[in-house]
Length: 356
Image (cartoon, rainbow, N blue to C red):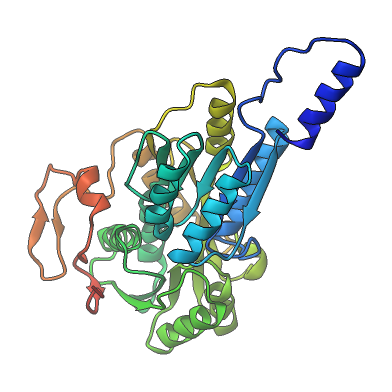
């Protein structure tokens, strides 16, 4: 029970008044575990915006721990939150999956929510965004706007979520520019501004005139602006860091999900589930277009987003060829969620080998 609740009860007892249980009696604290710093201006920053929405809209206390390494350190942090009074805990990186499951077994009364994973239990839910839908939108823009036909992609870890984004981007780009290619540099980190910036420099030196990323700092955008090329923001609207370079950004919006799940825990309706929301649900949003995006390109990107929302377009609708030119999705067919969640191959148009 948190201090605010104790104060209310003490005042009621002193006044000789019997109070009904407060509306949030089942949840006094929500805990959040972050893989990066809240000031990364990307992935972790947007999760923290969602945490603040919980405090603002539901009036409960929250606790967060930032820059938690994936693995043993994560398990220690999650266990400490569970033992310390967090009634629902959000663990916000793929590498937190197994630690979350282990701690959840030890604390069956605590509810856990794990972002981007696939393992669930009676007290463990999973959730993620269909970020690949946003990648289809920015891939369309890149296909229209590249002059060199070479796009640079700064990538974090070779997990299905990141590979899926690279492929969705490439497929959309080549629909409008069949000869364009994507070169990927893997930095094996979610947040390392130095490595991210160096990767962007190397890609530009190699001929890329547009940079995109699946890493969390604005460093690639800043390098793009310094070098006079265009780029896309990641996870949040990063235009303040590169107003001339940013064409748009994919925004991860966790606010509504976090508020709804904590509220469900508060009113006793929380159940283990899996949520994978996209543009239609509002979990994936697009930032306003930068001044450099022409009207016809804006219209083309808007059309892709609208078609995804109303179901006329799926980013992985066939025909789809793999990197070797072999057809893996036939015309009229679409990759199902199971195939998307396990994606470990490149589509045609991506250069280099996928690390294993």
